[in-house]
Image 1 (cartoon, rainbow, N blue to C red):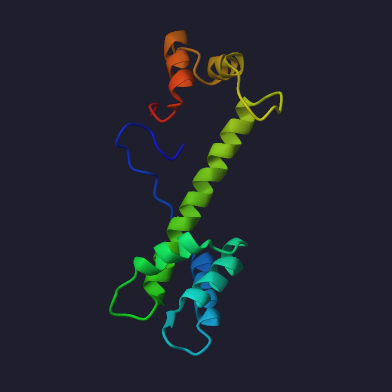
Image 2 (image 1 turned 90 degrees about the vertical axis):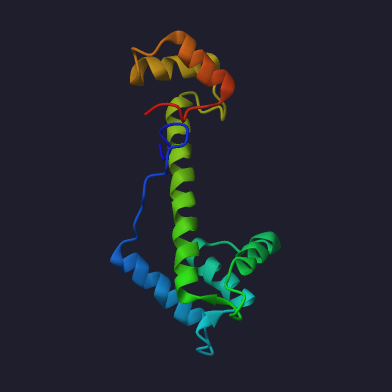
Length: 145
């Protein structure tokens, strides 16, 4: 998983050169007037192009409020940072979904305590049943390194 313990930092992820190039191309395509920044609407279009969804008003407000107040929009470096963070979150969610699916052997969309115990017997057979029970009850799978 991305997190391995209390206070742990997420694994770092770097975009490939081709992915980084794509992000720059999307920025330039959305900056139609070559202003050097993306307006709120430009930003929304860029997110649709890269992630396939239109950001909510709350998400757009959040992104626009995080930019340098001396500019009229999101500069390239800010945009690249935002996209990198969004990509990390997307990868993290996919990893969680993949792990959950591996545990959900009956494809029910939820895990029973028995499912959880069976999975841990396979992947961590020396882990005490008490620890597995604590993890299941508390929903904390990030305590393992």
